[in-house]
Amino acid sequence: MSEQTPTPTEPEESAAEPTVAATEDVEPQPEPDTPAEPEAAPQPAPPAPPKPAAPSPAMFAARRPAAARPAGGAAGAAPEPHPDPSESMKHGRVAEDGTVYVVAADGTEREVGSYPGASPEEALAYFARKYDEMLASADLLKARLAGTDVSAHDARQSLAHLKEQIGEAHVVGDLAALSAVVKHLEEEVKVRSRTEQEERLQAKARAAQEREKLVVEAEQLAATEPAKVQWKQSSGRVRELLEEWKAHQRSGPRLDKEVENALWQRFSHARSDFDKMRKTWFAHLDEEHASAKATKERLVREAEALSTSKDWGATAGAFKRLMQDWKRAGRASRADDDALWARFKAAQDSFFDAKDEVVAAEEAEFTENLKVKEGLLEEAEALTVDEAHLDQTKAELRKIQDRWDAAGKVPRADIKRVENRLRAVEQKVRDVEDSQWQRTDPELNARAQSMVDQLERAVQGLEADLAAAQAAGEDKKAQDLEAELATKKLWLSSARGGLGR
Image 1 (cartoon, rainbow, N blue to C red):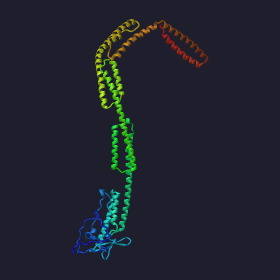
Image 2: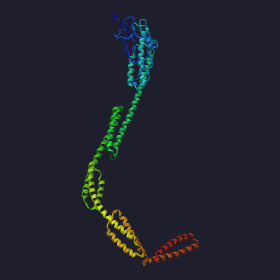
Image 3: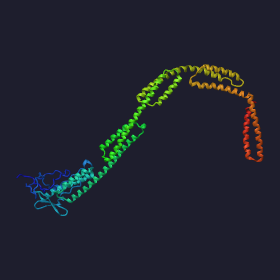
Image 4: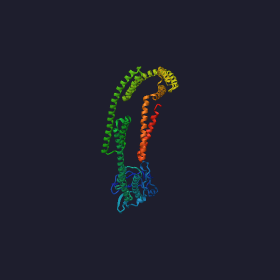
């Protein structure tokens, strides 16, 4: 018989041995002193691959459990330290025939296997280590739940796999404690599931609000008065809203079908309404542009016909009317408007340039005329204006006026100034003439004397009435008579001043 390593045997119904990389270290395999054949279990088991020799309790005592690493590198709670194998070994015993039993808390026992060729301590240590590996798996899952963002789905799968491994596991250890850990993990997984469900609901609510904002903005754009819409910016914004909607569908939480359909219907209708409004607006704008183009083409033809006119005043007025009509005509398309305006302005400039040349020549002539009239003003303002020299002054002024008319036009800017100076001299002469006439007019003097006589009689009557009222002690009547008497005396004084005496 060839030499081989002793292999522990387990009952046929045993599950496959779990592997927990986070808690196992590679250990040296001791060579047994005496080769031995594997001892058959009460029921034959299928051939198993060679397993390492049983580690000694001393090796377990010297070994430190590896710390579990939470998924994703996130800092989390480390798994609880595994019990020393010697502690787990306390929950088992080895029969005289080498069969290993696990002892429950109530004292009942269950066969877990045997380890031929090994001492009872080594056999117990082997099956205790298998228990520790399961406990390490449970601790690792507990640490992941406590310290990482492992999903409830992944945690449920891990827990199901662990429970499958435990089953009727052939291990030696505190099975009640392991069951308690599993029960705790089940509660933790339920909590994680509830938390995720709440988070999903909150995420869906936020996503619905964000979609609602997109819908409301689209509806506001569609409801804006067409004349106030910035079409380029608004059209671009509607396209952006659609891309944002698609991005929410691709990467955001999935909304309830009823909610998403309702929002999409509103969003789609808003986009359709905006598109219809835009088409209607631009169709109307095209009509306005066509009408404005026709009107401006007519104005351009009129302007070009007037561009060669020499009737400066009337034609300038006509161009002013054409400009007002141009402003009222509205806008054609930009290209048409620019081309028509260039023609209109060219015709207008042609007329006014010719007019300016004539006006410039006239202005040079008018400047010389101004010099003549300013000399005449000096002569007129030097005249002596009084009653003694009135006839002579009037004769001299008539000569100056004749020469003034013969001098011709002056620059427009100087017309009012020089005319006002001449009118001032003429007014002084008229004032002296009127004053003389009023004093010498018999009819006017007679009327003035009649007024003086009437006022004198009225004053005398009021004075008599006042004296009677005062004598009778009628104070109120006396006050009224005094006021009326003062007025009449004022009129009398003025009338006397108008007499030619």
